[in-house]
Image 1 (cartoon, chains in turn red, blue):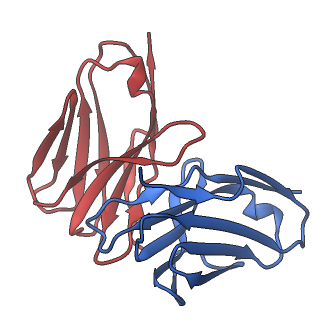
Image 2 (cartoon, chains in turn yellow, orange):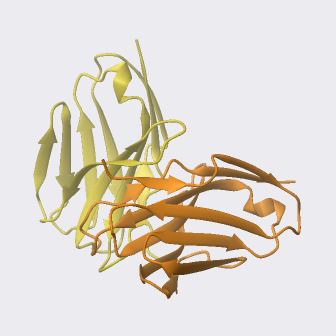
Length: 110
Length: 113
């Protein structure tokens, strides 16, 4: 079974701080996605990266796909309370399926 | 707006009961998925379907079965519920390959007592 390990598992920071979440695997993925899940809801897609080394920005969020397409990172600049949630990476090893990471639960304190 | 709807937000069932979790999507998506979500384990794939009447086992299919008689509906069946199946269950759909967005329902929190 392919695994995606995320770190850290939990993160509690003050508003305005920066943070980075990591998603690592020993397997190669054709693409990698990041989702955010808020309490009582299903995950919602933030971004998809498909090319090794690709960097995508979504306002204060920066996503990077590793050169070897085995890992990814999510960096948040000047975190806001609205960034609070569970962040999940998901890799597509081929067609149809998504393999989800273990999740990072972020809490941003005002 | 795209929508994946799960029939129940909360369910409480007794050990040994047969449990049906229903999921409907209105996007004409080919692929549908059932995941369970447990703290520290992320989302684990139970079953997925890439076409009507087609199904494939995911990583943790034991104790579960699925049914997809119509394109828009994907049902998860717990043949004989057990306490270790207490979990959050999430249904998702996507248009085709793994590079595309998965749309999720709001989840069903199942408690087996």
